Image: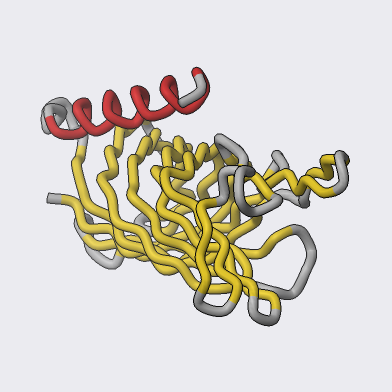
Length: 195
């Protein structure tokens, strides 16, 4: 496991521990579930994914800082008989601005760490580690998050997010040549409940 992956996983667990112990001073702890649609670059090949995790809301006037840690399953692309799917840990850190009560705009950064990634050709699946299949999944996806949402009650919210990927999703190796793919982008609808 490379250093970036280790640091990001450690940060995810630190975020989870902070969330688990932080119910004081106006801080709110909650759970968030989401459904997402992934796209590799500008190609029209979106597929569904799902996630569940913990969220912390740290109020600061008309804004709040919202770090999260989530566990994701997503199918990143499906082209003909070839599909790529994975489990990943996601660590977004967002700033939410509330122009009016309940309604918010959000922006921030997100790091996703693929834990298990595989490519399937029909029903034959191989780990995407660059050994048997000629592509290797990137160690981390880094992206910019923008979105909006609304809290129906102080404890129940719904939001929409768009993640603009910044790093190549995979490296394809063939004939001694390595080519980086486009970044992975995603759109998601999430549901949050604060305890």
